[in-house]
Image 1 (cartoon, helix red, strand yellow):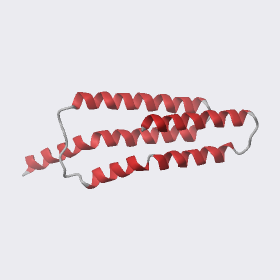
Image 2 (cartoon, rainbow, N blue to C red):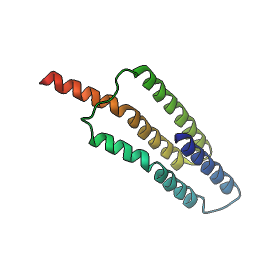
Image 3 (cartoon, rainbow, N blue to C red):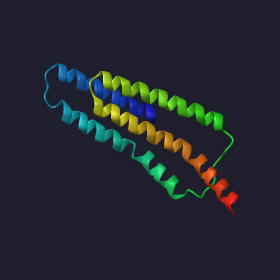
Image 4 (cartoon, rainbow, N blue to C red):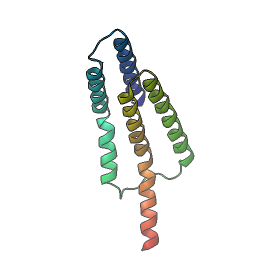
Length: 126
């Protein structure tokens, strides 16, 4: 899903850059509409984050730590490139949106491990 969102962000940034160079004055409104659209596309991931936070007591797998770290590095790297492209195309709002979506994606990846840490800590206390 993140590749679809990144494609939408970069497409909107390039479109905004081209329209801005052609002298179109409504580019900020178009970029704002694109930003809201990207957030709506990612609402399912936000729901997943909130449901994982709500079910913080449920168990998760703790053996694939290296795989998870590689996923986190990849997600951060890809979203960082997208953010830099948007910044270079003079679209800081879309760049900030990519940064926010990167953080949401990373939280989604890490939540099962946080749940395991919470369980271990509660067992140590009791």
